[in-house]
Amino acid sequence: MTKEMTDETISHWDDDLLDRRSDAQFLYNFLVGQVSKRNQQGKTSSYVINIDADWGDGKTFFLERFAKDIEERGHLVVQVNAWKDDHAQDPYIAIMAAIDRTLQPYLSKPGKLEKVWKATKARGGAIALRTGGVIVKGLVKKLSGISPGEIVEAITDDDTMSQALEDGAKAGGDHLEKLFDAALENLIKGFSQTDAAIHDFKANLGKVLASLPDDKKSPLFILIDELDRCRPTYAVQLLERVKHLFDVSDVVFVLGTNSNQLQHSISGAYGSGFDGYRYLKRFFDRTYVFEKPSTRTFIESLCANLPAGKIRAPENELAEVLTLGCEAYEFDLRAINHIMDMIDATATAWRHKQPIEIALLFPLCAHFYRTGKAEWPSTTDEYLRKWTLKKTSKVRYSSDNVDRSINFGIVYSLCIANMSNLTDAINMDSKSPTNHYAYETFRMEWERRKTLEINASVQKELLGIVANAGKMKDSER
Image 1 (cartoon, helix red, strand yellow):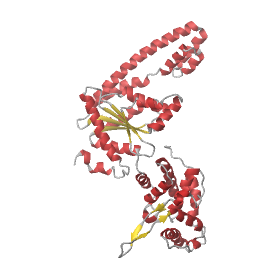
Image 2 (tube, one colour; image 1 turned 30 degrees about the vertical axis):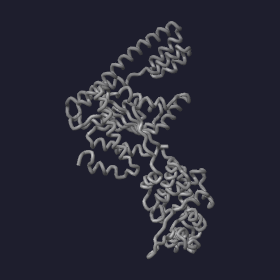
Image 3 (tube, helix red, strand yellow; image 1 turned 180 degrees about the vertical axis):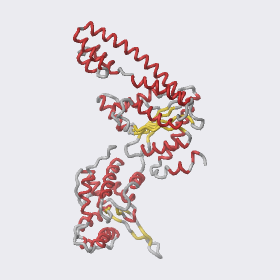
Image 4 (cartoon, helix red, strand yellow; image 1 turned 60 degrees about the horizontal axis):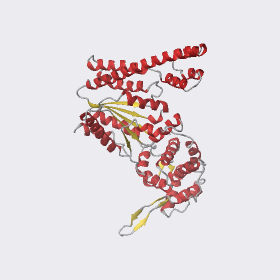
């Protein structure tokens, strides 16, 4: 079996319920092909692709497994979590640290790779230490007629220069002009030094790639996740670094973003007139958009993470029942994600052996999502009445079918009417499939608790638990 099709490769996609493996196969072939094509054309063969997907659509899941795929194909893979690293002063440092971690197994012995990597880090250090952007802004403000005091306030990155300008402002205009001339001269000199450092850095990084062990294929992949969760200024800095410092042949960047959220964050940080969409586009060679999963597939993927055995549904068809419920309520994927979060939190906090009845739990969560209120929805709710699991069964020795459908709006109404008194609940009419399902909800509990004096069903506690679950917010949203 080839590297592309090892058992391990297949196993790390075992829980791939959104069919992201096919995306990974296409993207790998596409990216390697793009690098090869650019090399043949004599162009710099770096490539930057943006994986654009909403929260909950599996970007992190995809990037983690895509990294394993690429490694098994013989490439070095650098993984960066931009959100965890946005405490760094410069994103360049975070990327270099991640590359350093990836290279460590090959740096244990002195050799060419160790030497060129050391040189790369040395030139990179000069880049990271260069400042001056704020001073440039101060000069622009001066030329625009802003007062010296405001200039000094803007130049906070260099205490010495700030103090000199303040002293100059007190001494008079001629002295201030001389200081600005000196500052501008230093900026030009610093720019030239930084430009040379960037050139040397790129050249040395190219030598690093050329010095990798023979069993490591080109290109080098750098995967960056959680960019849309960063501080907007940090995200912009990171993209600038990728564009200007790592534009080196045989380096591929794969970034996972919610581009819509990121562009709005950037626009918010830089002003309402700032075109975040156009700004982002210039950093990416291509953007790849995940296909939206079907409601059923999406819910199946979320149900896989629910606590086992804590929610009751007909014949254990929880994903099917929830899919029908979400379709009855006409929820989109974002709404489904929020509601499933509430269901998960409620099930996790449930302390009873008796499982939660889905005919009660889902309407509670759906109502909370729609109204923001923790209350039992009306039994005449139009959405509830549309929530039906259609089933039929064959009559023995006949070609006829028997309707075994369950209307969850009716189940909900029966549960609401009977959950305060288990004795009454087990005496309800149970002839129809719908009524029988509601009856079974309480019969099992009554069998467990009939020796106790408490006669109300534990299902009544759902209201309070859902109210608390609704207060929880996923940190990714």
